[in-house]
Amino acid sequence: MTTMTRPRRAEATALRRARGVVVLTGAGVSVESGLRPFRGADGWWRGHDPTRLATPEAFAADPALVSEWYDARRLAALAARPNAGHHAIAALERQVVDAGGRFVLLTQNVDGLHRRAGSERLVELHGSITVWRDHRSGRKVTPGPVPFRSYPRPGPDGGWLRPDVVWFGETLPAEAWSTAEAALAWCDLFLVAGTSAAVHPAAGLVGRAARAGAVTIEVNVEPTPAPVQQRLIGPSGEVLPRLVEEAFGVEPTA
Ligand code: BJW
Image: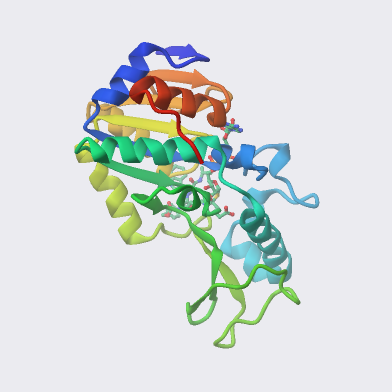
């Protein structure tokens, strides 16, 4: 395993030669857009630990509190702009696909910034914070970009609106998860960026990719338990554009 702050020729060459690229991202990729990570002191909200709020049990016990937290995060996501890391991943997709390769971006993020940066082959493993659903009927709605008038907000079918995200103890959307698992069969390079690699089943993908023979590279401000061969230490908004530029000679732009 190697650790460095600048992409070396080896990582850039591996990326350029790869015929099947999978990227897995987490909250750290959106930190440079001004959004909070999930874990650590920066993720806490009004004295509440996010890992305790992101559960069906928390919503059942206090739907007003959980809805207000998610509404604040929804509005922050809508107001945020994709950063250089999001744009570099979108540029990477274009390079790989234009060269006839396969690509998928698996994101644990619910903020929608990858799509807004131009990523198309995108799977949102943990759903979306901009879409909400009636907790009884499951009917989906997309609220406007203003705060809810009250918390919890009534849904269209007599329940409360809850965000269309995956909470602890809930299963990931079946189609999203089967796309992720299928990608392990064709992936020869697995790039993991801005995730603590603490939450399963997403966190297990990188080890499975490595066991299947893929080159594995992590981009993070600090090393994580992800079992990767190479670690690039630094903010994804700086490291990812450099990596894509070294691999393909293109400067990712907004
Ligand atoms: C930067 C940076 C910069 C900062 N540049 N980097 C196997 C073993 C043990 C437990 C389980 C298991 N399988 C399932 C479980 C249970 C559970 C789980 O994983 N628990 C663990 C905590 C132990 N998983 C589930 O319940 C999942 N469901 C499931 O498996 O169903 C079947 C089942 C059910 C019941 C029992 C068993 C099986 C569902 C998981 C859903 C997770 N949902 C959340 C909330 C989504 C909505 C929301 O956003 O509120 O998803 S939790 C939260 O964690 C969110 C994130 O997507 C996810 C991952 O967090 P992420 O993205 O990694 O963020 P952080 O904050 O943790 O890390 C940020 C990183 O960025 C850090 O590393 C920084 O260093 C770095 N960084 N700035 C680059 N500029």
